[in-house]
Amino acid sequence: MEHQDLPEHPYLILTLRRTGGTSLTTFLSEVSSFATKEHEPFNPDRVWGGITEEFKRTKNVDLLRSKLGEALQSRPNIKHCIEVVPGVLTQELITACHERQYRLMLLTRRDETSRLISLFLAQSTGAWGPDEARQIYRNIMAGQTKPNPIQLHEVKQRYLLDAGILGQTLSVLRYKEIPYKWLVFEELYKGQTPIETQAIEIAKYLGLRIEAEDPNLATFSNQPGQNSKVIEPYVPGIAEARDILSREVVA
Image (cartoon, rainbow, N blue to C red; front, side, top):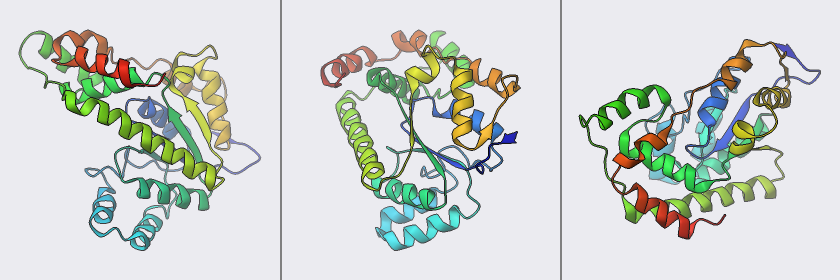
């Protein structure tokens, strides 16, 4: 991979679940010289989940900053889901990464209803990616397993919580005057500009130059979808959840 005149930078992707962050991170991990930590490493069950759990217990921001400094010592690439951890942790992570010359990206999805339906389906079925979905969906449609019903009392709350934490994250970036690149799922994966062209520009933002024939571009652009719609008729409560969101989501 060839470098631009500017030095290469590690990246921090700030996103919400079911927004295409895994595919983007997988691609960037292949072209970046920096190591990539496990996806969403601050989730409670992941490699740095102990930092999150300790902060939840202690509320000690100074200790959190120290732990983040240790974690970021080698400047690894990070994909971070902002709604899974405390907002203060995300704020401190943004600041710490900015101080270490990370390039920040915010990846959101315009169609919030589709994002949340995808999230509820994944939680119900246990299928979080195409590989898992093939077998799990087959078993559900054959009647061998049953998906969990959607918890309808949590639908509106999930929407409001996610909207709130996204607004909080945007405020942190704006008020701290931290530059970032805003990517939108529908534009990146379904837009008029070819995904390969956009991927080259994203890499350039990190200080990398990718040639058009780079095989990683083809892999990124040809990733299979999960096709969650086929399983919707088998998931109890999904139609009701969609109806709730149709009344709540601000388009």
